[in-house]
Length: 409
Image (cartoon, rainbow, N blue to C red):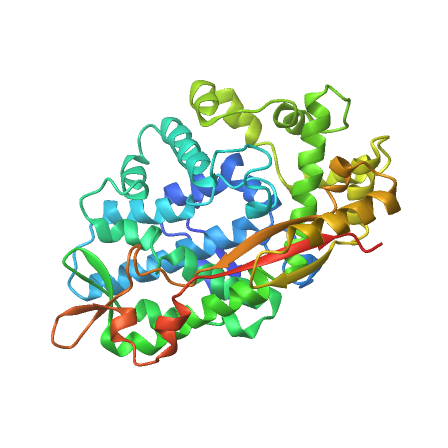
């Protein structure tokens, strides 16, 4: 039997033809854990606002892998040593960086498994794959966990200027049609360099980085924190919350076997670490499990669950108001009583329809890992010090806003 050709090419709508650089990358892409990402939307429920935002985590992971091959090429061309094993390791690390995402990505991050982040589940998946691939992911895992001595390799996977951010900004702006998010990934990658084991950008790339930070800020307001997106995601969170409440009372709810496992139990990270079967069950979950249940629950005899699900299926989302300060408790209480009377609900039940929360837009945080600018005199400065656009320092300040949701009754 002839060996399978693993040097495949696929056509990406953003970067054009992408080649798979290593045989092991092909094998990982073929794995059911990775194929599952085709069934998880990158932007959760954003398509309810921007109809084109139907791209998946699979799209995004492939894009990051492609950008990583380009970054490795550029850094090597500047005389910085990256061995073939390191190049392979960093490509595997970025390919699998989001493999732990659950249904609807960030929207349900803490609803299906509370207190366990997608990064932690990604690491569990990578450990499991490493066993299957007989230790071939050791280096990728070291880089992913920032345990490898060349720290800049981890920064390419996870930092404020990693391949993850470069891809999702460009990809999300493409699929939503929001042109403010368009960044020059080519230019930024061409400007990458390494100084004292830190990732840096050559001085002549400074304007591309300023544009990148501004684009990120605008994409948060226009896409990720768009008020209708917030409304839809909070609605889905409340559907899961109500379903969990009913499941805790052993009320019968239609759901797929995998979804049933997580709906009727509250697992912790320790449970995942103890029982590998649990991770396999999690790997069976995707957007379809959730939406199938939401459609079926429209006719459930629990009034709250039924109403919430009908709202979701028919896109009758919450009315949402956003302001710069916390909403007055009396205003919320007044609205709650009004809605409870109108919908014939108890106050506790009405709290699924009237509630407030907060959002934070933090485009760049210089207290975390910095974006270094390497000046012509060979010194490094943080982008906020090097930039001559006054707004960068302002844009780097986190902005917090409050929102109040209520039904359109």
